[in-house]
Length: 114
Length: 116
Image (tube, rainbow over all chains, first blue to last red; front, side):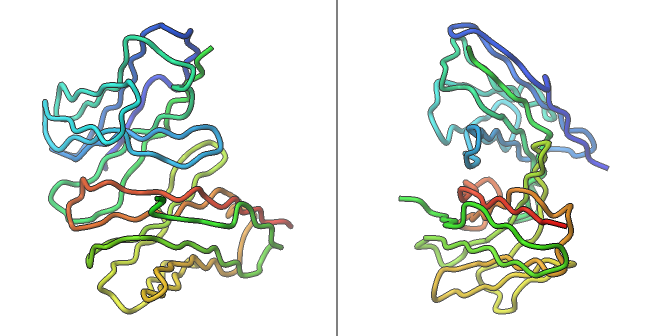
């Protein structure tokens, strides 16, 4: 069975500090990977997606970057956090070979920027 | 312009009744896919049901079913025999085209409260 693990569960960070969030997918080779952001009480907004190692596409510019250093790992980061970065970050995956399959979401990371 | 619109911010129903949540979408593509997810109090996002644009039959999974009205660009979610544990925020979403990595646009969500 496939599992998706996100870390950390929650973070409290200062404005201007760096950030690194991660997720790992086990039990599925070469998945498509995604980062989503949700403002408190808001909708989910796709930030990035990756269909292969080393290749990441940006969907929305929020002064964040993403990388896929390994087939099963997706990293979201920034060197300087803004207050507007607060929210809930969700990693998700979908099978690459099945067209239009649903997304499988991780449990998310709650980020508070103070 | 918003591609997916959910106008109902919150709904409250009694247990064991039927509830319908509305969603309208906007697309120029002839091929698109519509999804409903729910977000539990813990933040977990759970997939519920999917409708493919080329299918005329309404999708049904367990006590979830869809009311797909293509001419109106509408995809309503119907939950029958609601249970307390159905209380959650329900999101409608749309993906255009056939590629898995195409952007999945979400609506703003409808908070459902099921009262005992």
